[in-house]
Image (tube, rainbow, N blue to C red; front, side, top):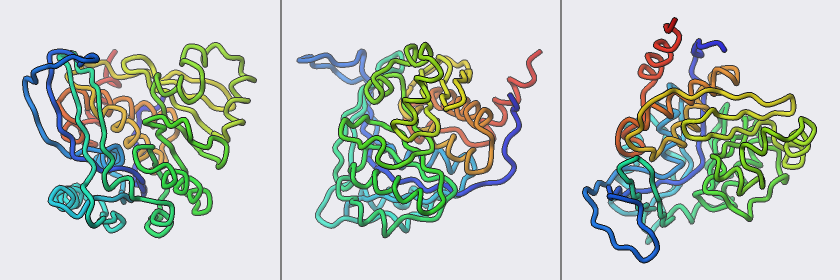
Length: 316
């Protein structure tokens, strides 16, 4: 696998959510009916759309974000924060009489997490707004934390605007209209893989090449990427299945690792990197993001990823 980085930046447009994250450090993840005392609480910028936009921008992409915030102090602070990250915010709608989105994130000492989201203004982003606000891009990256109609419209428009449409099918949505529009790439984790495709990653590996081709063809997918935490990332296409190694770390907090992977992958592909190199570097970025607390706060910059990739390349 070539470890060389892409030499030019590309354009990434992200359609998705913006939330204020309330992060609770807890001794264990809460069970039904259980009351826990938090050991620490923080407020940070989050939401899968904004997270992935920040991840892509920190890897050198020119990023625009299509989304919605409330006409409140949290929304204004968020716009200012994104502008400081170098992200174009002109396509973020400000919704009157509506609160900005929020999430409560519970993190245990092992770095595992549980997340509850209130969509707030994110739910007001509809198909018409997406069609009006969508920015030109090499890669269009969408998640499912915003209104489903907005995500579907964005993916439909990708095909008409010569953008590579990518869907991070998270959180998984039973109502998503698979096969309605072609999608170049879908990213899921091992749990979402089972929910969206009725197969675990191990079961996908055991399918015959013909069965995997049929699965992709039925859903009109070019690439299916399955992340598995510390285990290798699967890359499934009509030509076959590849397993891309992860970068070994001792995680402190896994919040935002999936968003880091998606944003970094979009940035690499937008810049023209081939799939194997793009997936490897996205794995490295995701691993580095687990070394600090929070989502955006922990996302590495391009120089950090370059340094980590160089360390691997330099090993005997």
